[in-house]
Image (cartoon, rainbow, N blue to C red; front, side):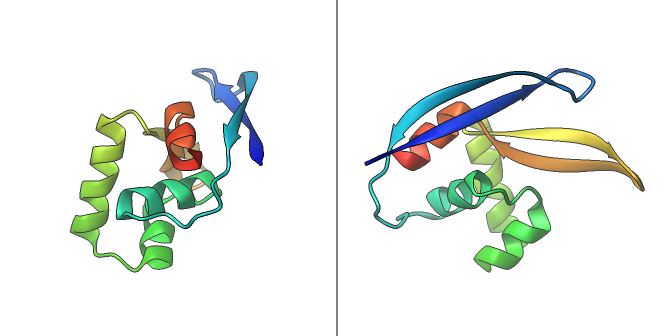
Length: 103
């Protein structure tokens, strides 16, 4: 069994430029490491640090370290947006991160 993943790319003014679709295999097995748990949450729509921390039950330092590692490996990217009450930061898996999680 495999999953079809659709990835939307944002332009500099936060509008959707295009979308790509790619097929990734589904193993059905639960993630084994904290990196994979974080990638899983990101791929299922969790976008901010506090929500990740609450869902995974990890401390600030550990989660920050994992996120930095995922960003350095280009499995995740940080997107800064202008929110109603000022700037906000969202975390998104990259195409490589989705492939890693679903493989």
